[in-house]
Image 1 (spheres, helix red, strand yellow):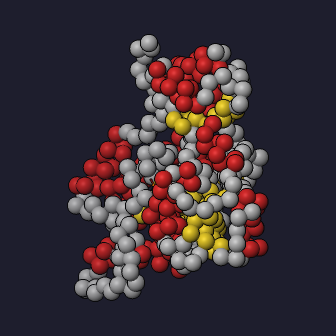
Image 2: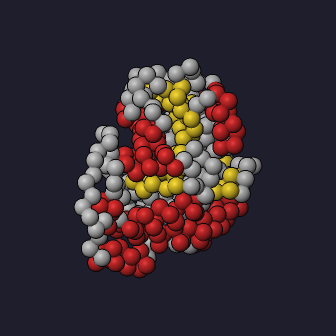
Image 3: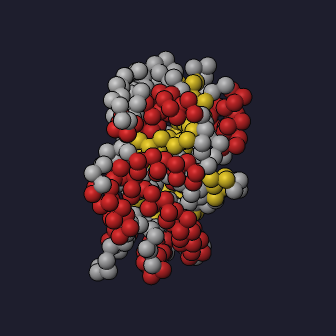
Length: 380
Ligand SMILES: *Cc1c(COP(=O)(O)O)cnc(C)c1O
C-alpha cells in the first residue's frame, strides 16, 4: 500500500488573481455578458491570431454555432474523428446533419487529408478536425484539401490553446475554430468557450446567435441614452458567457505562456524517464508543429506485460490517477447503429492509450512516482 497523497491527472492553475478578478466583476454589479466578455474576446483574438473572437458558454456550443453559421443542416454530412470527446460528433447531430467518422493517423491521433478523403462523399458539407489533446492537426494540408474539395474546415481547438503550427498559433488562419475553457483544458473559466474567425460577417452573426438572435446586445441597450428597441432576426440560442467567467479568463490568458512552457518541460522530462520503461510509446510533437501537452498520453505496445485496465488499476493502487486515453464516439451507446467505415487506428489508440498526470504545480518527485509505478508493471 502506498500511503502517499494521490497524484491527480490534472489540476487547473488558478490563484488569488482569478479570485480577485471574479470578485471585482461581482462587485461591479454587472455579472452577465458585458464589458469583461468584450475585453476577453479582444485579448483572446489577439492571442490566437484571429480577426474576431465570440465568447460562448462552452466549446460544445461554439462548435454548434460554427456549424450553424456554415449553414450545415439535415441532409448534410460532416466528417469528424470518432477519436475525440463526444461533443465533437454531438455538435453535428444538433444541426440535424450526419457525422461521418474518419480514422486518424497513429502518430498524432488526428485526422489527415487522406483519412478524410477516404470517407467524404458528395454530401460532405464540412470537415470538423480536432487538435487532439493539444497535438496540432496538420491544418496546412487539411485547409488545402478542403479548398480543393469545396468543403468548409472547422477546427475543434478545445484542447489546443498555445499549440503552434509552423511557428504560428493554432487558430491563426482558421475559417472557424472552437475553444474550451473547461477546467480539464489549460485556460479555464469554469465553463466557457469561444469561436474565432477572420470573417466579420460571421462574427456578427455568431454574436446574434448566442444571444437569442437579437440585433443589439444587452450591453449596447444599456449604454444607449435613448431607449433602444431590440428585434429578433432569427431563432437564436442562449449560449452566453458571464462577465464573472470572462474576468477569470483574462487572468488565465496572462498565464498561458508559463502554462505551456511548464507543461512542455514536464513532458520532456517524462520522455527521458520513460525511455527506460519498455513497451510504452509517448505522444510527440509532429514535424509541422508543437503541442501544448494538455494531455500527455502513452500508447501501450503489444509487448507490454499487462493490459490497460490492469495498468490503470495498478496505478490507482499506487495513488496515481491516470485516465484511459481519448474515447472513440462510435463505440458509445449514443452512436450504436451509426454506420461508419472501419476505424482501426482509432480503436487501437482508444483501447491502448492512457493519459498520465501532468499539471502546472506537479513536482519532479510526483513525476518520479508515476514513472516508478509504470516501471513496476513493465517489469512484471
Ligand atoms: C473538452 C472538449 C470539448 C468540449 O468542450 P466543453 O467546453 O466542455 O463543451 C470538445 N471537443 C474536444 C476535443 C474536447 O476535448
